[in-house]
Length: 317
Image (cartoon, rainbow, N blue to C red; front, side, top):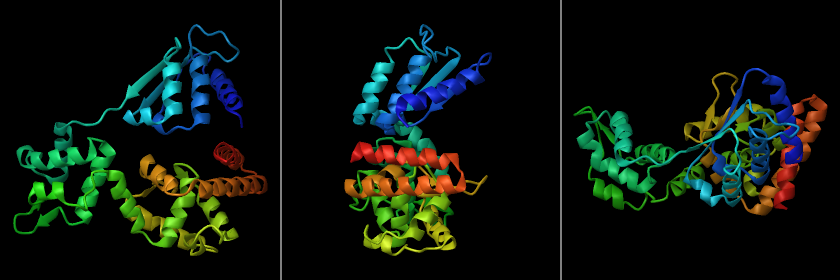
């Protein structure tokens, strides 16, 4: 529903839960938040103000908002955070900054079981390519291993990477790790790519039953990739998701078996790889499907997801 109504619902809930004990809420990756989410956060931050006396004020609530340098690229999120900082509220901010070369080298030495002095030249190249972004560092190491840049020697029983200057200049190792991730995506089969594109519209957690229902209906008009998945059974869908898991794109929860994105940047990259018109159509169809499933299955979370899909469709239409 509207951000104000959503915020009011949560604030009523928190007021009920925290008459005596405080509540701390942590929100990660604020730099990826959309306009509706930021409006909800702004209303909650205003309610958390100790000097605020509105209907849903709650000075027993602490908000912790974390973000990276990408916040400046999200105009809505950047302006909202700047606005919230003017509130005398119980809001803490965690600006997650890139790693320096020494920190990257600590990870590299741990990864390769090497001496710090030995791995430092390699770490400098990795830092240059990734800007010290922790996620991109890990993806760079994965990419380098898959491409054979890092090899384990059976004679020395050590990892070897050769001349780092060659690695630095090698054309296949992009200066933009996002491009490397895109390359990994393209290498997946068409069916897996089609499933991931739909999954990217559903959020961080991927509800299997929604995916099964979506492709069971058939949407041949969307793309040739989607046509390869029409009518797919759940067992086959699981195989495709497992393939994405082996590529490091998805992970499977050990507790309830749900698939989720290994990192929000992968979800965002997949989502943004689609034309805006395609994304809008996906949101519209998923919204209608979720509403239907929610009513049939009597699942409240599906109704909430349906509302979110329709809201996103309305904002981007």
